[in-house]
Image (tube, rainbow, N blue to C red):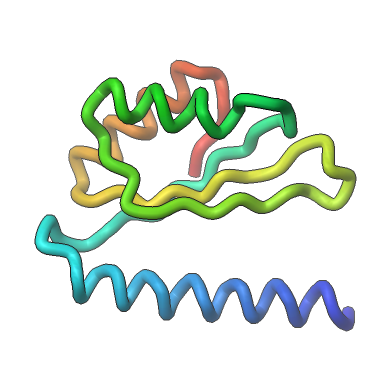
Length: 100
């Protein structure tokens, strides 16, 4: 317990609040949150972002979170609309990364 749990709790609360704010302000409708598990290596964020951008999927926002061992981490992406979410999941899976 302790500090890591408090930080996780704070991050979860901030994520929920941020999603509410973004949903209220986006003309394209509510955003979907996707979390991608990736290795920690140079260019990984660019690889994912470029794949989505080339397919016309707009990333409304993103956050990075390294794992404790710094060998891997997660990229959390917010995209607008259900179709964009489905397309983003397909593209990320094609890159070989798990997405939830």
